[in-house]
Image (cartoon, rainbow, N blue to C red; front, side, top):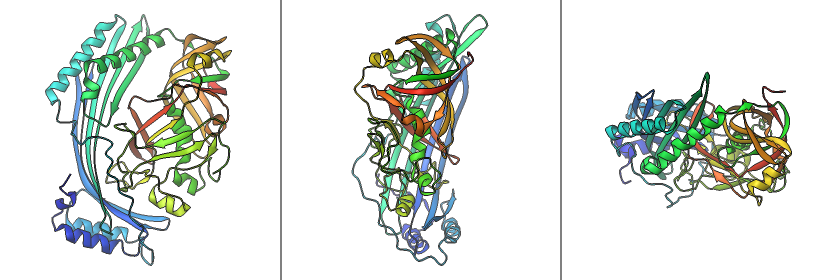
Length: 471
């Protein structure tokens, strides 16, 4: 990646560097973030190509950080005039401030993914043919199939981060995803199943025949399970969470509460608890942005800091938070490479990458056998979380009764209701089957969405409230 994005400005790069240095004089931190990106999505629904979109995005964001304040301005116009307007806006926070510009992030030669542009291969026509083939295959698998929806999405983002001290960081980020949703029916009853795969790589790893057929098969399996599901019970139960995607509950109910900004401001349920026992013994939670080609991974974050594996909870004790540069400095802690932004038009903030719980030493069968009357939650859909209190509500998209240590009938409409910090203390057993999700996660925070990864082993948590339809 030899070309510089700063060359897109209508003036010499040295002039932009000079203006940047002048703008950030006497500040604590800040940078010029430049982005070029393109994205494409295709949806094959109801037996035809329902929608297709292609989007290009380019622009810059200029940030000035002074104490707890940050000035931010952005523009899609690469001109000296636009830069000067942005500079005038962000210097409002530095008026009268006398700071020492922070040292640049450490450098890295590690590359966690390739630089290929997944939008280029296969071409548009080939993608449409593939979607049609997947649709036909899914419809032919089972006579109960009534509807099939298949989508392909890809993006290619190029970023350059320039600091007032002359340090420059660059990254090229591919991202792909395949999703399949299937509706099955019997009489008047219809149920849905879905499955998706993706990551930071080319399309080859999601559109190989074995991969997409497995994706279709999993969506159909889930749909048929739900077609036979009985109403979920209501009450308090011991719950076994499946490995992999159910880690989305950990992400929402616990992960957000471990982001630096919430803890610095005292609005997290975990604020002020460093060193305290916040989960059961044996529970270790990490955020790891360094896993090769994973959806939530980044070679560098959006401030130019290399990502890392950060231990958040170790053997039940709170030992760390996820930090961007500003919150780390204000809290007297180390930056962990978690400064992320949706695009050049957004200011960075502490965000998760791949957040997961480490495995234990129990077999799945052993965990199930330990539960007399409970729920086995294999997959989740949407949910809501209150960061301050830790309270959450999550809907199960695939769940089963556990009766006398055996998996029983599938249940429909199960809602898990609880408190993340409190429930972490009720973890009783951890499986030896820790798995990450299949590459489909998105995370929203303060109006910004970024791709993330989640994961966990099979996990037994006692005393969870289940909202169902059967008393």
